Image 1 (cartoon, rainbow, N blue to C red):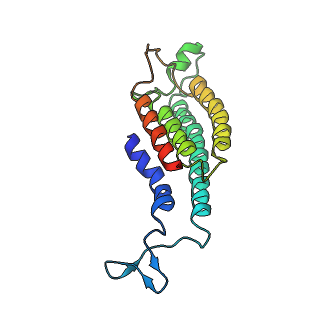
Image 2: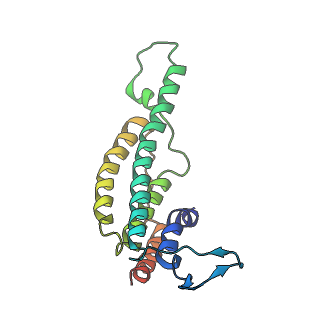
Image 3: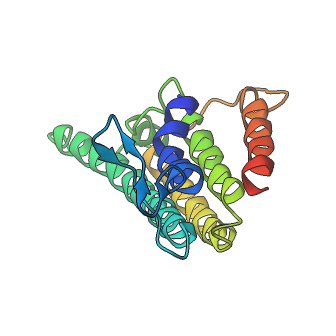
Length: 186
């Protein structure tokens, strides 16, 4: 799943940073692909501004869309479930009301980890072209903490605690992203 998300989110940024405008040829002698198509060129100043714009749109848009989705989807599902079961009005204890909330699902916090690792990639992989990324990530994480707290306490059933030694497969993924970040920033 991480590999799919990695390609989905970062492919356009890698293209702009490393491939766009590199194989265009020289003035008067352009390079044509398959004898017919010309490669895209960067602005005369380079592709840095375009990469910064792309990162701002993807990182900001992703954060806004994910937070809206994390708020609306569980709230609407619980609202629909309440309307379906609103035929009999009885006073139920709080634990019974909580049982009728949305279940966490089999993946549990998988998508929360995935979201944070993707954000870690945006902050580290292209920080040389977008130095504002850590500040946007901080603001997003502060908002994300509040959204997740609201979601976990009011919209989902209580999770069953499980013992864990470490963060599992996410550790080597984050180490790989950190190593790749050194290469891309150099």
